[in-house]
Image 1 (cartoon, rainbow over the protein chains, first blue to last red):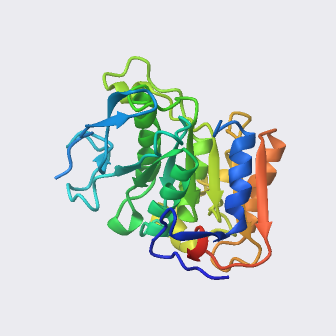
Image 2 (image 1 turned 90 degrees about the vertical axis):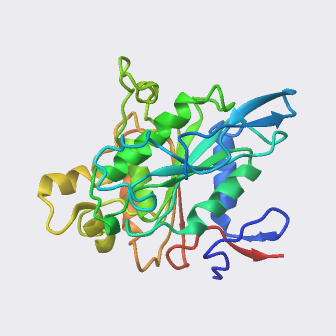
Length: 38
Length: 272
C-alpha cells in the first residue's frame, strides 16, 4: 500500500478520494449510523 | 505569541449572523496554570488545540479532538492536520491536540490531563462555537490512540463548583475513533510508547491502570477501531483486546481488521 500522505498534504479537490484507505469509508458510514453526523 | 482563546468574528451564512471562534492555535490553560508544567517553552510545555472548521453549508454541529501519534515522543502531522481536513469535509469541527510528550520529560498523567482539558474546553464553549455538546468525540492514532483510549475509559462529569468554568464541563467523549492504537501496557504493548508514558520499570498497578483494555465500563462511549493484521509496530492484539472488552461491557463498536498494511498509514491516498 502507498503511504503518500505521510508528512501532510490533504486538500479538498486535490486529493484522490478513490485512493483513501477503506477505513475512511467504513468510518464515514459508522459515524452516520451513530447519528454523529446527522 | 499565543493568546488564550483569541476570538475572531466569523460570518456564518447559514444563520445569517456573525459569531466568534478561534482561528489559530490556542493554549488549553491560562499562562502559568498548566498543571505539572516543567517550564514555559511553547513547544514543550504548553499544550494547545489547533482548530479546523467546516464550511457553514456542511456543518453538522459535531466536533472531534484529534490526537496524533508518535510514540509519546512526537506528533505526526498526517495524523493531525490531514485528519482534521478530512473531518471538516464531513461537517465535523476538528481540534488537533498538541499534548505533552515523554520526549520532553513529561509522564502520565500530563497527557491524560491535556486530552481531558481539551474535551472540557470545547464542551464549555460549545454554544459560542455552534457545537453540539453531546457530539464531541476523540480520535487518536497509535500512541495518540492510546491517549484516546484513556479518554473514553477515564472521564468525569466535571466539578460543578469549580472557579474555572472549563473545569465544570464533562470530560466524557461522546464517541471514540482508534486508529492502529496502542491499548495495553502489558506484553503486547509498543515498548517505546510505554517507556515515554511511564518511564522505566513502572509499578504493576500503574501498568494495569494505563492498560485501557482493563478500564472499559458500560459507560464507555461507542468506538470505531481499525488496525492491520500485519502491523509490525503495534500488534493487532491491542485492538482485538479492546474490542473484546467493549463487547463484554455491552458498548457499541465497529472493529475493522485489514489483512495488510504498515503501521501509521493515516488516510492513505494520493494526489489527483
